[in-house]
Length: 202
Image 1 (cartoon, rainbow, N blue to C red):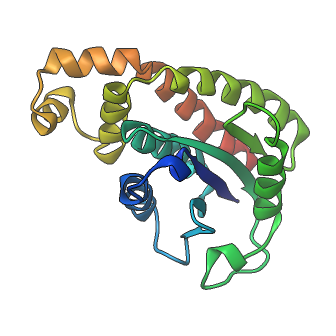
Image 2 (cartoon, one colour; image 1 turned 90 degrees about the vertical axis):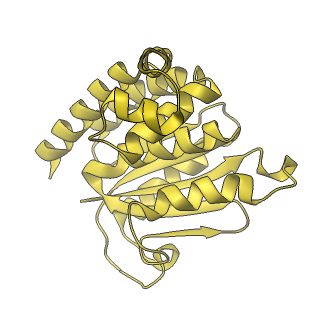
């Protein structure tokens, strides 16, 4: 089972500096795979990425933090399933994961949703749509500073708060405060549950 993320950058058309959103987007995607086999940016500010299923939510939240830290939003759908056709370019690959991701992305049209999930399991979809709805609310409350520290934590998963403080040249209590504002402890709990749930599906 794999996860396919389909997304686009909110606010990119208003930016006069493409690199202000392109750099954090591609840098984050590159940490999870190779271009264009595992991810591609296309049609201006749209992108698609393919990762192992258990890494799907981590990548989605990492991307959200990286772009929010740069002043941009993201709209993303996470599709779970299989790959029936692989291609050197991920946007030309196919399978249920791609179908689910595309359908979920289309379902956001005309809504305020920015993070949705879909699989072939209706009960899973029903339960995890609620989790994703709550995750949206937590992420929407991120300040630029909070998003920056979350992105840095994802960049350095083994780093302790003092390490993050040194990288940003701020105090450890400031790191702790930003992570608290970001509700990072709660987000980690959801990530742990997601990975445990995915193990039971594969």
